[in-house]
Image (tube, rainbow, N blue to C red):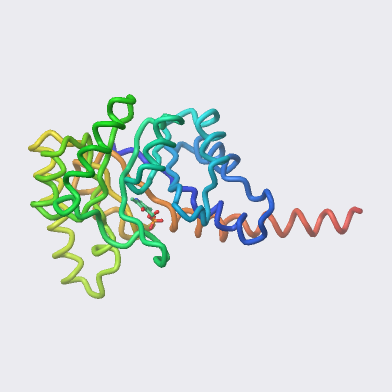
Amino acid sequence: MARLGVNIDHVATIRQVRGGSEPDPVAAAAIAELAGADGITIHLREDRRHIQDRDLRILRQTVRTKLNLEMAATEEMVAIALAVKPEMCTLVPEKRQELTTEGGLDVRFHAQSLEKAISRLQDGGIAVSLFIDPDPDQVKTANRIGADYIEIHTGAFADAPDLKTEDGELIKIENGIRLASKLGLGVNAGHGLNYTNVKKVAALGGVEEFNIGHSIISRAVLVGLDRAVRDMVDLIKYA
Ligand code: PXP
């Protein structure tokens, strides 16, 4: 059965809105693990818009499952990863203006610099995954430059405007999984997966780990709101 890595960036996003200390992604990670998450994923962005260096440092000490650090393959981030040593680094493209990661890495275009970053991270004992679109050339290049895993970008599938397009994207994902497995790469998948569409990808088989954030945190807000309001009503009532 595929494992679930819970991306807790959005918890940090809510905290950053007020610049205070809550909600703390460290507490969220512990709750996710207690609920059965197989791993915790965070993206330390260059602009530090949500996850902070402090979160990474503390999570390294508190996460009991597996810590997956999403990051751009920059000198700064490689140095941070080598100091903190998450179990896995997932290299992603990063643009300052984007709302979230848009599209997979172009590993063919950046092969040389990525190859260097991969081997430095691996020398530090960190497994490396490349976040790529399910494109055969990208998969083959990821393998050639020494990645341990690919994470298949499921965004085009998740955002498909109709069933026909969705089916086409699902076939690309399936072919990507099969090719990567044949080459000996581990396969993760993520981006835009939710409580409706995840089943179709999970049913393909061959994915080791799903990394899911937005839909889980969105659901947490709704299923947790009832309890949160009741707690506040009680506090005021019984003051
Ligand atoms: N995988 C990668 C590489 C990502 O960049 C993201 C978004 O941060 C995710 C998975 C999770 O995507 P979502 O929040 O849409 O579930």
